[in-house]
Every structure is written in C-alpha cells, then in structure tokens.
Amino acid sequence: MYYNEQTILYLNGKFMRAVDAGIDLYSQTLHYGYGAFEGIRAYHTVHGTKIFKAWEHFERLRHSCLSVGIPFKYDTEELVQVTYRLLRENNLKDAYIRPLVYCSPNMSLTAPREVYLMIAVWEWGKYLGDNLLRLCISPYQRPNPQSVKVDAKITGHYVNSILATSDAKVRGFDEALMLDMNGHVAEAPGANFFFEKDGALYTPPPGHILPGITRATIISICRELDIPVYEKFFKPEEVFEADNAFLCGTAAEVVGVESIDAHTFRKDWKDSLGRVIQEAYKAQVLEKSFTHVII
Image 1 (cartoon, rainbow, N blue to C red):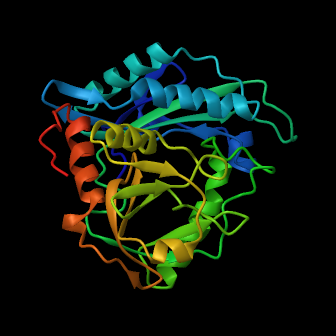
Image 2: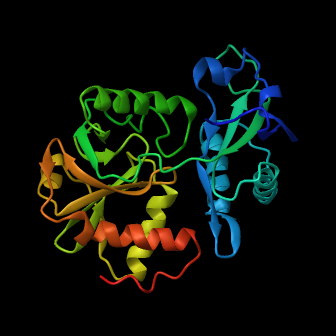
C-alpha cells in the first residue's frame, strides 16, 4: 500500500525507485531505534499542491535529531524543495510524506559517525478514519521525560505507541488514551488530545507529550475564532464529565471521540467545538478562508 515498482523515493541525495533502495542491516537505527522521523501532509489546494507547515516539520526533524545527538547536516529549504520534486516524480497532489533520518552501522551505544536521509511519499487517508472513536485509558504510560526526549519524534519511542494501540484494539476499542507518570491524561499513541467543557477547550501542556504541529495549529485557530483554549493537567475523571473531545495530528487530522472507557459525552459531535475546529482546520490546509465558520 505504500509503494510499487514505479514509486520514487529520495535517498541520500538521489531520486530512485523504492524497490531499488536498501538499508545496511548493521544500521544503529535498525538495532536500537536510534533515528528520527516526521509525518507531513501535502494537499491539493485552490492554489495547487501545497505541503502544510513544511518548514515547521523539517525544523522539528532537525530538533529531534539534535536533541538526542544525531548529526543533522541538511538545509531546511532544500528539503522542502526536494519534497515538492518528489511529489511531482510520483504524480501526487494529495499525499503523506515520511522523512526518516537513520544512522550508519554502529553496534556501540554512542553517537553515529554518519547519518542518512530518506523521504518517501504515498497516498494515505486519515490515519484514524472519519468515524467517531471509542477510546480506552491505556495501561501503558507515556515515557518519563527524565528518561527520553518526549518532545522529539524518535523512532524507538514508538514501540510505546504500538503497545498502547495494539492493546486497545485487542480490547475492542479504536484507539488508546495514554496517561503520564503522574496519572494525568497525556495523548493518544499518535495524536494529541483536546476536550470541551462549558464553551472552552482544554489540552495537556508540554512536558509529557509530543507538542504537535497540528496541535499548535488548532490553538491558533481557536484564537482566531475567539474560542477559549487552556493548557492544563487533568485526570481521566475530569474528561469523563466533558461535553465532547477530539484527537488531532498530521496523519489523523481532526477526528471526534465518541467515548472513553464507555463514558459518552453530553454534546453531539455535530454541535461541538471539535466539529467547528475540524471544519476550520480542513479549510486552512486547503488554503481556504474559514471565516464562514460560525460558533
């Protein structure tokens, strides 16, 4: 579903067929999860194909690498232009974009001497679909920020996310909602979390979460629409009493939550602030005005 014999990717300065690409089996990233990646989307907008927040995503890739000691020698503007060319090479107008920085062979637990860059693109619908989600509180916590760099998209961190999502699905839910080490709500395995209460939105503050670029976009949209939004710590019991809730992320975009541990919300999704945000976000990524959105 991600590539075929005609798919082109970018690897270490060259455009090549995905089927011809390879990775050194002694790569430190393969053995220890010591690498960094990004998730980016391109949209077919009213002004042509545009990569949403391209600069911010590639700068976060730089931050992720440098925060864990992985050298990053790439120029952001060059990476943006390479990605636009890669979209053209694959005849894609709406696409998901996956840059990956991975390390040279190294069996020691030290920083690599060399790093490599791959960028792949493919058509991908909303990661969590369009239907309202049934969440469960996960038994797997977000990592302790004193043990890993939780604000970086490091490949090895996502074992934690795989465990949480897999557990949720085995238990009959659509996705998990993870807590931090103090029992506060943190985020879903691959998305940030907001809930609505009495005309305002609430979301966990940075510290135990990945402060997503979509999350920041939504906070900006709230300010433009005069929707109060607050960053604060809260326990699951407070969320159970919420009016509504939603998840957000580059892959997921904005998707509503039906229930958490079978606790349903007081307000229908169609009447929620989340639905307003969903429409405004869709308008923004397509470079349309969202001044028509009424709250």
